[in-house]
Image (cartoon, rainbow, N blue to C red; front, side, top):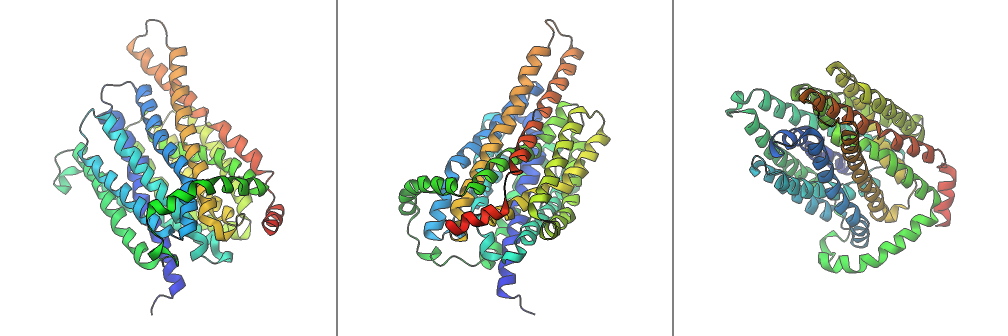
Length: 444
């Protein structure tokens, strides 16, 4: 039986999550923090390496945050969401492949490739998110959004499993050592991401003007002036403004834990293999959990479900700040897997119900902008708090054991600093009213 056109478009959209999650899983969450700390930042102390990683995350996120509103406006003006999705995707694919070539101790070059790769994956997601209202019916939008995250967990998890096996047993794959296997893993992400994106290119229909939108330069110039107009629109839609402020804070906490969890575990002295196993747990728990959250959002309401996710992450943050055994990291991995995809998917689909559908990319540009500004604050917060705590706690003439102990204690302080972001984000979300949001839209 042939796939119905609308069903085909949905699956084409969903498969992009399957494709790009390889970068988030293998690169951002998995091997980049390990390789950055042990290979590219060879010889640096754990807190300095954490600060460098935080800066690397922050730089890429800052560029995307500044570009996001303009890119969203351009996409709406030209209906070129799919075109820009493709452009940014293959920028990220190229940078992921480039990490294969970065040598030992070259932390600045690794940071450059990582930052540009982050710009690629994050920029593409602006247009991917903005395509959601176009491919999903309104009564199924929470489910379709969650299905995307669910497929992302499965696809990213499957490739990550192969990458982990490559690292643990390099001889099985004809590789000389684990370091070489990790470098080949970065290349495999590029092939996976770039290859499966072809399904999205073929199955998701282009916008009506995608083929004749004009040059990118012609589209960008007038878009800058419209960013100011978008700011006025956000201010007029008060519930949108409140939700974006809440989202900025709580998704900061989520993103920080995603990006910094492995680095944090290494700072506490956990073995890299234990941390990789924990990441695999997140992926394969997250696959069914994201689907469950999609159904929960339809039946219980997206806003209530988001509160549930925030509460779970507050618990993760507190538990993580005090954990001391690898079983604790596995427990945290299960909890994160249960709630990570759900809070992201329902935030995305809940926002779709607050904004005008004919300006979706414009408003998703601001949505992603705040998400990226949040990704600047969280990693920097962890890095700075860790460095300050290390300086304050370190004795005048420390022994080697004291240096290790102080470094680990400083890392716990840096982890605990994330808690306030969840708390304040939940507090602001409490004041978002769905009925007032619909009234705002009717007057818009």
